[in-house]
Amino acid sequence: MLTPLWLTLKIALLATLLAGVVGIALGWWMSQRRFAGKNFIDALLMLPMVLPPTVLGYYLIVVIGRNGVLGQYLDRWFGINLMFTWQGAVIAASLVSLPLIYKAARAAFEDVDGRFLHAARTLGAGEFEIFVRVTLPLAVRGITAGLMLAFARAMGEFGATLMIAGNLPGKTQTLSIAIYDAVQAGNDAQALWLTLVISAVCVVVLVVSGRMLQAKH
Amino acid sequence: MTAILDLRVQTRLESPGRSFVLDVCFSSATQRTALVGASGSGKSTVLMAIAGLLPHVHGHVRVANKVLLDTQHSIDLPARERGVGLVFQDYALFPHMTVEQNLAFGICRLGKQPSEAERDRIDALVRQFDLETLRGAWPRHLSGGQRQRVALARALAPQPHVLLLDEPLSALDAQLRVRLRHELAEMLERVQVPALLVTHDLSDVEALAQSVIHLDKGRVVDSALMESSV
Image (spheres, rainbow over the protein chains, first blue to last red):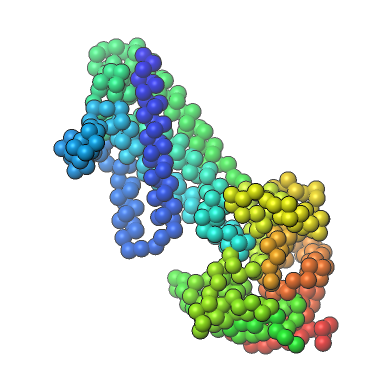
């Protein structure tokens, strides 16, 4: 019974890490640049939040499936096949949680008062130093809250994961898929137990992220 | 007298529904100069232009024989190389850094251990501005007067050629303002760094400046030496 929990935690953690790196970089870039089509790019980045997970799963099959746009080269050149693997589940969970991190990071970077950046420039700091010593520390609470939400979202991911990684007990069966499996098999006690576990973890994550959003310097 | 500050700056600022043209030319030979004018006359914009914080500025800026900007000769030093100390209207102390870390920001660079000389410089600033008991304090716990001292010390930490003060007393209530005006005058006298002060309060001018430049709608309309410095 613990295997789906550990697998879910592993997948959610790695997915949050992956989406974190990409989402924070994109959030910073979008907060700094003005260009034609910025709203369109923003809409594209937010798309995983509104599209049905099955649609995302289908897109992923088209891209990283064995005969997919990228998948065929991954298979041919590196012998990597992401279908029906926990690594594929990480990609799926990253995609669905990316908008949460991107949006939080962008808002956090945009909220950093420009006077602090001006002050840092007059005090001799270059742009990288300003990012590391001023921008990032001032944005860190908002970014962390986004990471927590993304982690909670990755914990509960179902549709895209099922399409990419399938339902292989001990290999790709996450908590939410195990709940679905238990209900289908009429194992109500196990379904209830797993539901309580995932609910408890998500509540803790949401409470902590809520407190982080409220906290101010 | 040789000019300590000599500039001509031209720029156009666009914001929704408003276009503002700044075309300011003046030089000042006094140690402390006040820039006065009504709200929106361009006072703070001049400071930003001198500090190198505005894009698309044309003209020249020379401070104590150092050329910061000369668009004719394609010289436009970035803000970090201008050697200009800036004190913001509400001080803009880094809220995630203690008083000591705020002071060290302009002295110790990222990834480098502070040298003995750098540590001595921080200690000297702490003593000079009477901040011994506040070294580990966070900006949010400081009073208005303490913030002003920290902001001034931080701006002076990298040993700038000129100090720019953008309405340094406007964020304070009337009573505190009178007291801190005198404190600021004493501190400016002590540090001996040329200062350009933006204000719209004539009491600030009388207490702090030796000459005054009057701006209106982005242009200099008048300049004068204060009686005390004639």
